[in-house]
Image (cartoon, rainbow, N blue to C red; front, side, top):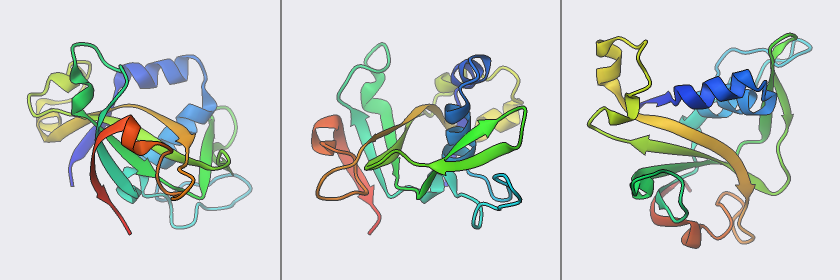
Length: 167
């Protein structure tokens, strides 16, 4: 298992703009959440495993995402959760919601061994920084493939290489 860190600029933008769905997706689907209530005293069944629950992993994205040619360094974690989540800062916190129809959830992770991906992580101790091997840059729901609802539509055209798929 490798330790990942969410991009501080992404999280800052999400909370500044009060993007409750993106915040909920982070807590429920990216980070994972083992003991959160989702409103009306309903527990998330066993919590969520976050990216540990990925159904597949791809390397390299075939669309410009990052500057200076780093797109081939992006790993795409694919999840097929039953639910999505939203985060109500003023109310009940994490809440389970319907996931988008016919979709899978993807998280874009930049794995780097040189620490360059952690430039924004100024508040982390050096000891913590030394354990982190990647940064979660962004996440989103994408259309699922017609022939396999656990994979993104047109995944062969979207990504460079399939690393693994859980059966």
